[in-house]
Length: 70
Image (cartoon, rainbow, N blue to C red; front, side, top):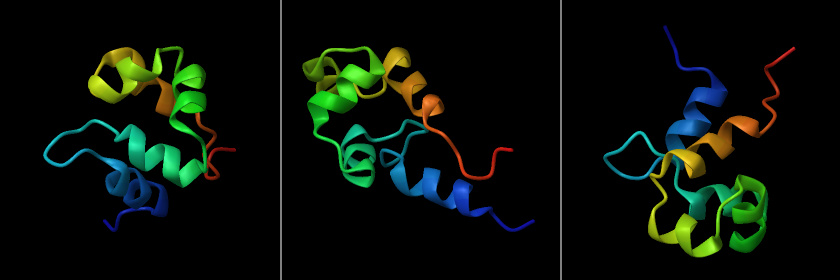
């Protein structure tokens, strides 16, 4: 089965060698300053930068609307 475009996008955002989303890559994709991404995630900017694998930071990416959801 071929990967869907959203799967490919998510894979491109991952931290190397992990299942975690890179906050830097996500912020760049969304054209957001890191501070705004951290506020959206409900964490301090320093926490997002120093511990991007933290569960609270990782949950934030699930709040981003996906085009393939009906």
